Image 1 (tube, rainbow, N blue to C red):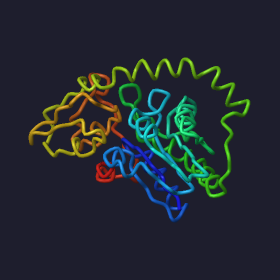
Image 2: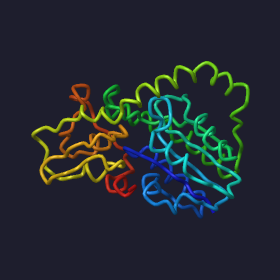
Image 3: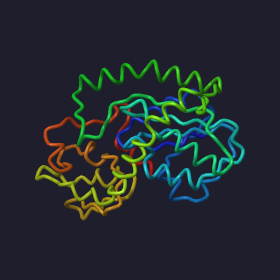
Length: 265
């Protein structure tokens, strides 16, 4: 039996997790936000455990870090981590491994999988670029799934990985720590335009329960994960993040619906 835990803002990680689960049968797909609300779900006796997560500021999302600090995979013999990201490097795997080692476990396999980067304050996602990135990702995902079926190992202590850690980890950790320190307050940059239809989808897709809704307009509650699900799934594109998202294309993975994102919690 396999369990794959996932966290996803606009569907990249969920799409990957669904693909993996469709092959590693029998397999349970379990959303990280749901686990954090249900302490009984932290214990897992499966032999093969997977975590699929996006890369945030070169590291793990805060919500995934909290999950890994509490989770216990007491009988796991094979633990894998798949990081969906716009960059093929960062400290997510190293930090996840460190959290597991603190409990006497470790990653057997870790891979980055390049997907469309949804952080709209920095990037734009025109449809033609999205299509190119998703097309390039398909054979890489197939190779990753093949590795997982065969339970191949990926040694995080190999020389190349240690060299990358030495070169990139210090600035990546500084960037991750500096930016994430301001995350809860950063949701003050969200604004709602007059095109808002009061549908409430933004509140429903927020995995951190950070949005309240009075039936007319959403309000952010200052414990944001910066997944931007609220912005990308707004059907009227009424939500902006400061001025840096004006006129930019919204994105969610084409195989993932807002209802699936909302079901994480």
